[in-house]
Image (cartoon, rainbow, N blue to C red; front, top):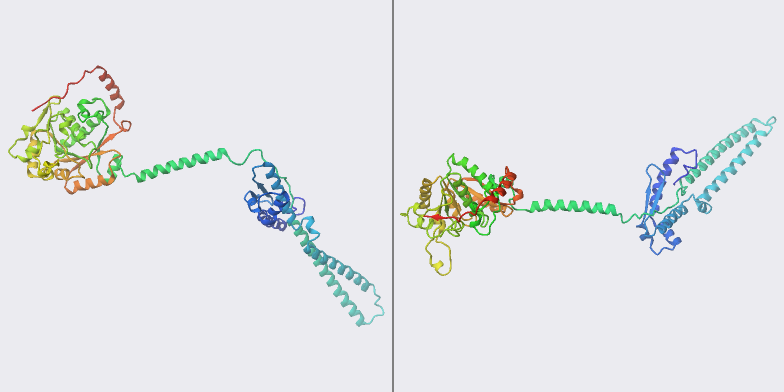
Length: 506
């Protein structure tokens, strides 16, 4: 404790303020060279005072003159000894400590002043007593005046000396009181180590790990350039989602056709929901749809084939056209030879579309128009395989006429086209149909690809009907009655016989 406020019953506000200010000063002195070096020397520590300083802490208890000194050390006994010695060294440095009072030049000077004042006061009082005892009966007026002046002067001096003595004595006592240091609670060691704090460290590690995980999630989401949800698509280009489709089972293209799938599966129901939305559009006019995607291998051809299947199953007279003259897929999906089709109809205007339509015995309302073949160019003969100018053929007036003829033969015409961002085929076809459906593969459709694809289609005055999100994981599909359909699927699978292979005829 700093000051004698506990021992002294008569403590003024001035004493308290002085002690508080002195406590702040002593709190700083504790971690300085004189105190710490004294402790190092007395205890014979191997560490320097600067090293010791890192392990010594001092705290001023709020609204008191108490200093709390704490020391950290691997040995609890050593920490106790250091804390006690630091307190001792601080007391030794204080002016009010008894060992320093006898040799302090300041104290000697004050004591000599006090002794001198006491001597003057005693001499003055003796002189005053002597003057007052003088007989004045025979004194002249001048002598009486001189005597009275001397008495008055001496009385004033006595008053000044006594005042100086009192003030000097009070100042000395106050300074001694403010500089008084005492240990009121000896240093004690704790049997519980302060470090490491296993519980605290665990909580901190948990919070840091959680913060890092959350931060990483936000960072990955910020850096993620993929379209993952229908909301992302609407926000980016304003195109609505027609539906979400899960990944179909099966290794080959034909195995992913809905007639070879469980009719009660979530994916089958997803296509029916998309068909329902398109049915509302059919009542208002659109009859031909172009199916495309920004890039290849995003499920475009499978989506086109299955949309044609569900349309035909709903009673619509449906024609699916393989307009991908570069890499046709519909003949592989429906397992028919690609001997003749759209390529021949584009090259020979006299040919009738009906002569190249393949019927499906399993789905009576569905007919398929393959891509057919194009005659090889010189480049193809030397090893190339691209058809001659497919974009010019698809953008020709002959293609427009073919679409008109096909629309007269069916309720719905669905075109499977190449990717819209890599080649111009889909763009030149987009303004020849009533609506364009964009197929996006979840988590693999870059924002830039989608943005550029939509921009190219809009520049061609295409009517973007919406988008189908492909390959959505099954646990993320949100379908009505999904649980009921799953149960029904197991019931049907347990009793159904193997379906015959798809039969096609001209």
